[in-house]
Length: 365
Image: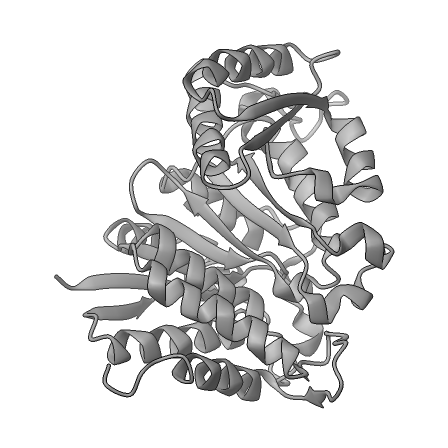
């Protein structure tokens, strides 16, 4: 049966890094005779320029008709004026909501050749390998517009609202992930202050009965922010609400030494997911061949694993990225600790990843 991947290149370096990921995926699909095709659609600033909206309805329809969505990045100074009521980021929030993508998966894992690029001491980051599961469609970011500031009001209200069902489904996703990893779940909240956090903690405690093999710890968000710096290797799976997850995952991304290495997945109850690099649109280097495609290529590996059930192909990508780094290849943003290093551009890094994949595949395939 044929599969469809919708590609949303977006803005800045988005088109470059998604092109790299598509090249890698296309190589694997042809090599293993998978019937998958790609369709491009607009989002973010590019959509504002072409359609006067950051998320055209036809983009939503195309994504809903797909088996997976691959996103580059949105935003840039061109659309970053305070006076603008339509902004690229609205497209990103909108597609998450339209597709009901309630769980954002953001790993933080250190690569041995990049450890010296971390701002933390080597002994703190050598064994870091955890995942943050962030609730994605509720909380403060989706407060009711009628309760926010109007054009002439002096007061402002943002609403942090969650239903029990919204909490239960993302907590279940986190427990399921912990079961397949090191069986340790840290639930992060602010239960000493917020009523929504108190319900969050209640739900996690109740759900823990369904996952007896998973060790559960409750932690306050401010304490967790500190522990991510003091002892990041203690964590396995962290689950938290939308804004806390946004902040903590950005903090965690610095531990690894480069935003250019971090993939992410946004999932719902079925196989449809949206996959994107953690980094932004980096408009200052767009079109120069300096963009690091590895985060998007690793996001493509997530796509294979979570949406297409192609675990073997996903592992080929992840192993290839590791080998390319060990061989000393790097884009300008990476500080690689290897005997010999070779600086390459976006296309050349993609070539190296494909070559490293090919080296793992028997000639008979």
